[in-house]
Length: 109
Image (tube, rainbow, N blue to C red):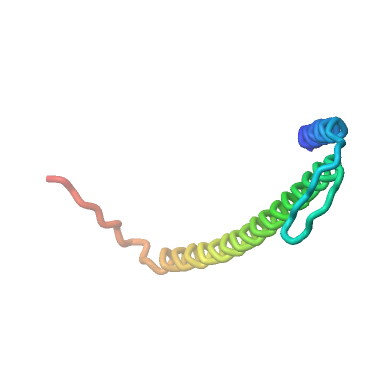
C-alpha cells in the first residue's frame, strides 16, 4: 500500500509542476463543444478523468475476481462433500468384504 501511495504522490507532484509551467489559454474541442480553457485545467481534468476510469476498471475487475472466488469456494465445498461420500462408501465396502478372503495377487512364473 505504501509504495502505491508514494508513486501516486510523486505522479501528482509531476503533473502539478507540468500544469503550472503551462498555464496559457488553449482552445479545447470535444465532440460538439468548442471553448477556451487554461492548459492547467485541461491537464488536471484529463488526469482526473483517467484516474476515475482506472478506478472504475479496477472495481469491475475486483468484482469479477470476487465472484469467481465465490464460485471456486462453492465448487471446493461440493467436491469435498462428494469426496467424503466416496470415502464413506469405500469404508462400507471394505467392512462388508470377508476378512478371510486373501487379496488377489499375480505371481510371476
